[in-house]
Figure (cartoon, helix red, strand yellow):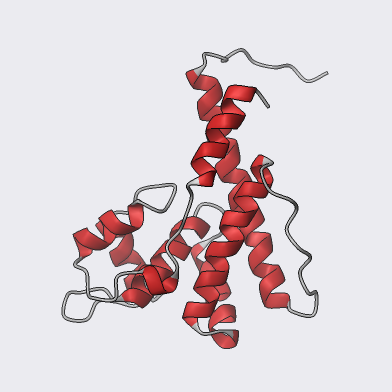
Length: 174
């Protein structure tokens, strides 16, 4: 990896922090507030129609008195990361597996910690993640999904950087 790109990636990941469950707003947010808040922590902007669609499909909890609570925000962050590599039906399944085994606060915090750690690992600024207890298929399943997400994020960032530097020449396989 080129040194300037590596340094820039390291700086951005050193500052990466997805808010943990106890850091999420514990008061109701209106739809436009939810989209602004969540968009600060995910790779692609969240729109009101996306949120409404996820509520309609029962992937995230809906608003109460037009306000979204902490659980809705946590689920929305998870779904936003997963949606680019996992189908909505598979997201629903993954969330169901987690709900059957963990409280949302525990599962969400684990998701955030794993995602941040795997992103740092993929970029090369952190040691390989610890081995997963293979007796726990829920964590193994989540980590597999997160590896897919992290490599996709890294690839998109790397391509954007190369385009910005003007490296548009095609590379032919040998």
